[in-house]
Length: 617
Ligand code: ADP
Ligand code: MG
Image 1 (cartoon, rainbow, N blue to C red):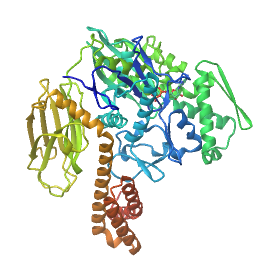
Image 2: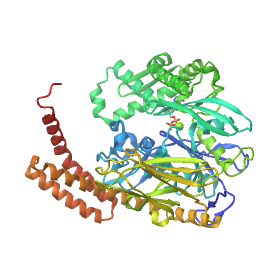
Image 3: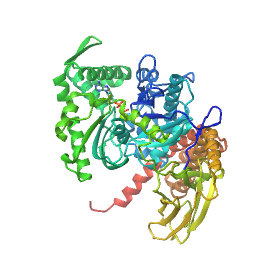
């Protein structure tokens, strides 16, 4: 199956061009290519030699947007408008976000199951949009350095990223004007960078230890004939270099009797202290001692003191390694190599402890910040067909998915997935007592199904009467090695099921595939905006319905003022839905939530109190 390149600026099709590899990190992002002359994987550097783009976006008051180092400076002075760690929010709903107070900016808690949004002043952004700003900055950097338009990319994600998170990353790329040819696991990219897994006939089992700014991942990979299989992953999504910085800050607060209330109250001072802590940590990777002036104090830290502070963090990573080995059913001596990834693996205690744990010298000769991006560039080169040694498996040329609420395309199998492949997702009913569900299968890259190609539809019937939202309908897509798509739908509570077989490639020429891809890239921005609007409208509609049904049941428990305010807010939200402006609709949703939340909680507490009355507990 052919892969097609489209020049986004000219709209023309190109056969030969550069594909970039991108490490879209929680803390830092990088972009790399196979150098056109030296043919070596190379991280793109600015004239000042910086390679890392901090994954930070700042929204200035005047509408000025900055990304990277420029944005990082505002962490201190303007925390509410400086968005960091957005990768943690990719593909997540509010209830998935463990610690919203971790973020200095506003994450919208509208109690919905939908994906999180970030509010900056009166505008609402999705993690996808925010990641797209970072990707766009990387793309511009590459275009500036390479002096050629860049529109094709391989982007890396953690091995544990689920379907939704991977799709969100793809969407971010699309929004940034990039054709994302492949999403690659970070540990796979890291091992490619070290040349592991590139030779035919090579069989290896490796551990990739990745300690970044805010996250720790350990992945065990089995590599056989160019195919990378993830045997197990483990880690901690809230453990990394930032925690070392925090430990240093706490140590200094205690040692110098700094009033921690005062620090808490003064965000700028707290940030400054944190930056000094990071400086200390980095310095101690090569030096034995660090000192800096802070206010009227001289802050100090020695390497042995630092090691005592971080020992518990290092121990935690080792017990995760232990679990990963156990899950992969492997013993330490079955691991052929331990690849070190992430800026925090520069800490000498980390290297030493990991080496001792695995009982072998760690693989750390490359720059741990760069290995993932370099590996992504190698994977890009393989996709470009330049590395003939690696077998390229068949892929799906267009995405496959089904229609969901509001006529949106929900992709189950993204384009360029290796086949055979399968994917599944759960859906539910919209109406009480709904006895059937229509499954409509589409192919294409556009966000609204009406712009895609309809492949088939069928009804899953016989769903027993249940309140809306209760049935669990699992839809499974399977593309077998011959490219035949089998779609199955099953209601899990009752067991009723139905399936259908489709030939997605049937009647579609290469030229038509090209046309559809071009079409989707040209409409990417409009499409994403339409999707965001339809999602906001659907969310508002659902909120109005649930609020109305709450009022039907509980109106007598509310004061007149509460009732009037709620009804007014509902009426306002209805008008806002018609406004076709997603930011206005989001504001309306927040307003209605803010009004109803206090009494909804009160009524809930009351219900629990009544239920518990007279019971022995
Ligand atoms: P991520 O993959 O999460 O984006 P990185 O791999 O870029 O993160 O790692 C960033 C972390 O590495 C930060 O916490 C940073 O302070 C830390 N780091 C960078 N250089 C050093 C160093 N020389 N010594 C210790 N830690 C470092
Ligand atoms: Mg990383």
